[in-house]
Image (cartoon, rainbow, N blue to C red; front, side, top):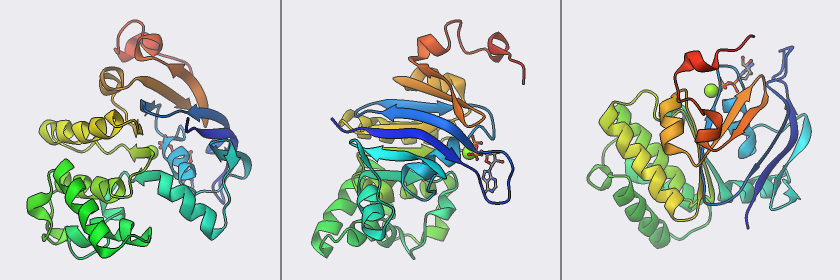
Length: 241
Ligand SMILES: Nc1ncnc2c1ncn2[C@@H]1O[C@H](COP(=O)(O)OP(=O)(O)O)[C@@H](O)[C@H]1O
Ligand SMILES: [Mg+2]
């Protein structure tokens, strides 16, 4: 069974006093929908950047199937074949002139042939509702289309672990459903999807498991009914600090 293990991770951004991740340990198994929640600054985005090796922890170890990640070029490349990250702002992710080129760049970087990359693009374009938009310049996409294009570019690499950082936040309810359906379809094929969100109702209704971060550590982790036993009204969970 595949497992991504954040083993006692500590990370402090340069020039900052407090650690963003402060001894965080988390095991993520396969085939689950996991919601990552917690207030602003709790460490969600940093955890996601650790997941695919963009951030290398100061202390602790990221392990995949038990083996520590190797941060040399080849090791990072192997990690990113298996762990995909969709950033909060899709603009940070879309670099190519048009949607087709953007989605195909990941598979081509993995060393697939042009023909294989084309198959991947066609498959994820269909999954993400982008088939009619493949020739569209990326700058001419709407917000929801940009999110779906960024997602498609990562899915084209077929990540076993897909991390999506607040991708549903800025979307209208219809597009949000589309994006959640895409995430669900990926999870249903025995991949793991980790979605960070501020929306407790979404977390409770969508996730198999909730991971709640506070101050760079796990505050709580469990099934939605264990995390929100009395429903998701925030006043039930008011805390100090
Ligand atoms: N680029 C950065 N430079 C310095 N500090 C940062 C940077 N990004 C995040 N932080 C700090 O790291 C902590 C964790 O932030 P983050 O991982 O973005 O939390 P979340 O995504 O849960 O809001 C916060 O204290 C935040 O201010
Ligand atoms: Mg964040």
